[in-house]
Length: 292
Image (cartoon, rainbow, N blue to C red):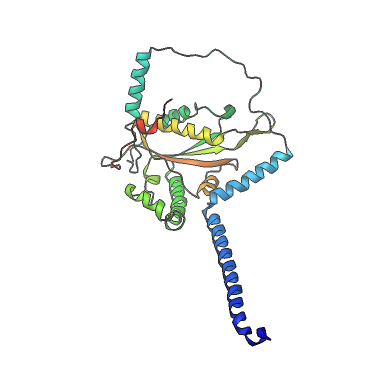
């Protein structure tokens, strides 16, 4: 009888409690949905393509055996020129002074560069160590103006989307001091472009069997560093460019196979007479070195 007389006083808090629980459930579900959407948006076209190709590679690996990259390698005496500690210190300082003058350049002269210089720089990059000596790299050297125009069109189309949508305020804010945007004049101004592709695997010439390339990412990064050093040592300038979301399209344009992925693009040449670079300094030794 008591409940029947005062039922409305019980019903209101019960309904409020149920409504609050339903609202919390909806909000939590919305947050999870937004989180998943954000994570999905962070994946670039290159990353999605790489995931798919890695899945394809795993499937292929189940169907056929991998073959060793090298077999029966003869070991030979090391050719090593011994120099004094004094000479070693002198050389190390000279090399540091040389490389400390290296700067990233975005303004290139149309002055021609003998192609033999580029060949030597790429050969030098090819001396880089690699996992199990698989040498997992392909260098594409582009001089053709028409090809450079096509490369620029692909990159600028994606870069405009990157700057306006993908990269976000923090990333684009960090780039403002360098006065860079999605317009990449240097891609057609520089006399040469070098595109570095890492090879996830290759095929043995004798029987066409796959060869796994260990540490291909680390290997090509080391090779890139040696290439940049060789370019600077030759009296040229370059720009380390990583065209976001352009890998598959550039790979198709240049006719590269699926086992190759674009890692780095470097315009190479001479700077313009009025070339300017950001007035920035490098970290001192005590900020980058830890000793025990």
